[in-house]
Image (tube, rainbow, N blue to C red; front, side, top):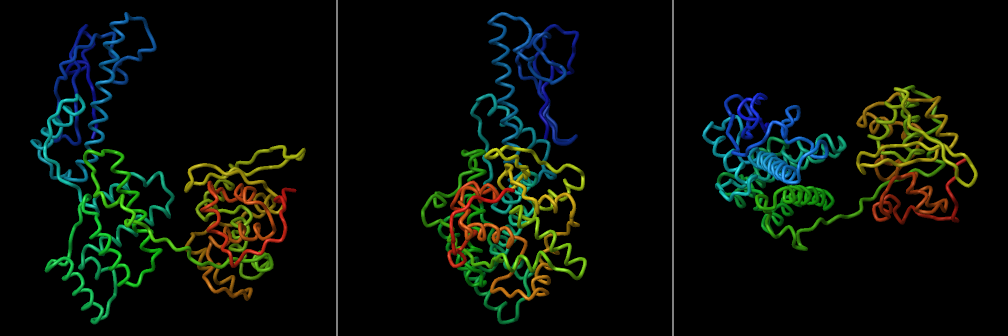
Length: 443
């Protein structure tokens, strides 16, 4: 959908005065043109940008400037109204099936809203799954790939919860299990065995049923926590965009609508175990995994950050800079963290410097890394209670630094955490054995 303002009907530069026109279109068929009945002089119109001229430039009387500023504010209000309402329209209608009459009516109402004229039409409340899918589209470019993957996974879970047929297609159940689930869906949703929840129906009943379904399926509380956490974020996001249209049920503010998060247990690798991994010699593909693990550990990186930095290194774009610390020139590595949306600055010790400049490994997918690191761990005879993955090396760095007595603030410089609460989830109490307080070695 595009909104274009015109100087008259056809941008006629020969006319000294024209009425501002508006063109709103989505396709050739879905198009509306009309006059706004607002007069504008030729000198006051910016033909290149299709709007009022830049008022900081040129000379004009106070009255002229005031009039043009009012026009500019009105055009901005109209454009914002169309952008906001088009999002609502996409969630409540199938755009490909919209008629010219529906489009014309919608444009008229939306224009009136932008002009401050109260003329409402009844709008359907959007379905939760549609809102969720729209949120993923909006955030696709801004969020890390794994975050988007998590949103899509949660959406699939919610669709399974709401629709028996979708649920059984996604799972392989025995006849006995199918009978149990058939009875559960029939009891909750009736003969159709499905219910499409709307945006304003996420209430205590929804919460209770989802929790019951999650438990029956055998998922833990952390799994349920993630679903609720993402759901609250999405509901609040759309509410912030248009609180008059997106009105979630008041229950989402209630203390009972909460995420029951338990800190999951995980393994870490101590210094001796890390040396076994880092000094591995054998299969070339496992040696490559060993090199990748070194960068993950000494850079305290997430795997998507490792992929990003390896690609930059191979393009010759490794971002480093010098800084004086206690009369010593220290080289820092600038790493952008997509999850946190800011860069962290890592002091580069000689070992990390050598890896980044001389021993650049071949990047592989996160899935393959997690597969091969388990194989490597087995090759060097390390046994752990909990599974090892790419994130183990980030946890291990933090835990080992805490055990060596380094301050939380100095470790957080490496990890890039913004707050101590999230930082402390990385080092569990049963793994902590602090010796003495030391500064992190930079030389």
